[in-house]
Length: 272
Image (cartoon, rainbow, N blue to C red; front, side, top):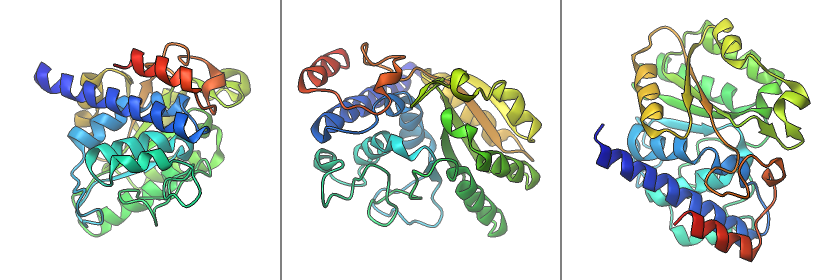
């Protein structure tokens, strides 16, 4: 891919980050850390990788994306709005009474949301169902799912991982947003899942390890996943919680806390 296109995608990720900060500041609550860490992955999927039609959200042939770590809804809303699924002005209504943009994504209210998520651990199971349905229906669409570090402490994730491998769901690609933090602290101190790459391999997955903020590596990994037959692919993405905002980066306190008006201004200046 040429450098101009890579730069365009990096700019999209920066726009998504600015929108995340702005909407969380407006809402006064929400989850910035794990939303910011996933912005590059979201930009790559929505603006380069996935075969989708924003004006036809339920197009049967579309690729699917499941945000398994549903508390990171701001990154999904920002990507959907930027892609044209709904007016960007609606981002200002995040978490407000009567808004369709609630703290966790609602598939019945928000165009482009494939699954209502938030109860951690369930997204991979749902993605499995979508991928298996694609196989049974002989469809060409692909399914992408984003899971979080703390989330893979859930037993359901590993039941789902075993099923993905058993059914050879090579139309399924998962990303692990490996920022190494969760609400209660560092993942390794709460309940270490390491070595994560070896675990996924043991469950029958093809595993790729990348820098989750390097757009070229993200796109190359997705392409490798497409070429991998007979196995689902897990892309272990090394990321930084709060990426792009200096005072949020690698700070567990920003897992679920909204920035003040002054902090929003500083963050937007850094993301200019």
